[in-house]
Length: 354
Image (cartoon, one colour):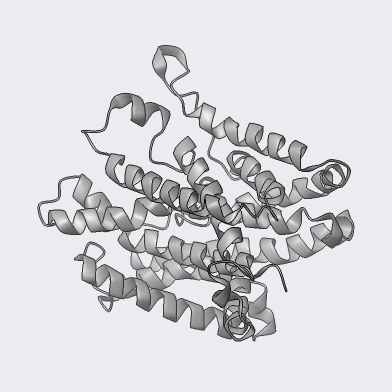
């Protein structure tokens, strides 16, 4: 669709960012935990490929809000909820069952029984990425209430509401509790949406905001600086305590919030006709990018299984590996997952899962 090329591109970059995080995460963690088998260069490369991408999930949610909160696309609460439930509920159930089945078959003693399996599904204990379905489902239930409000208000109110809502998870992890402890954010299926409510609102509020070209270098420098900061400070004993307490390297950090907004605004400024990356909006290019952009939910769900199979069988090397292996593994998982999902979308029964 003309004018939304940046959305397709940002979807693709974000989903492959998720793949990269999961590809390098084991090596980055092993390095900070002092594993002597991980050379320093592999650890730092893994960190540099992981931490700067903490924006991917918030930006995914922002893109969801940019599309779902559009009053021009809204056809009533019943229609919206039926379409969302028809896509998200089967995918949520099936992908949890897929990962439960695979882990039960490949991990000795993993199968906990049906009750415990359900509990793990509701608390993110099955696979580290399936909570995203719960986020989108929760925000979808609120959307019919939000769209009428969006229709009668303006951008100033949307931005204010988004900033206030995004402040909730930020404040919840600041040392404001008794004895300087974080107040905390509850992690369960029915509250996962709450920390991302602000991102959902800001996704719509900032859609269409194309900053003047003189701001582009500022945003680029901000993205680079914040990415370097997150890479350096993550689990680093040399990082000051106040920085870790007030702006830690995690999804609910104010640093990640600012980084996410910068990436979102950069995409709109660059990937558009007349923008610095206008070549990316050519029809021939978008004929390839748009289908992948529409397949991102399936890529998000399936990639971790492809990664598990690849490392379990040894085809993609061990989980903790040298950085060249990590890059090759990342490319392999991206290609295999994308091709599988595009093929699945051609099968009516499987289409709902991706």
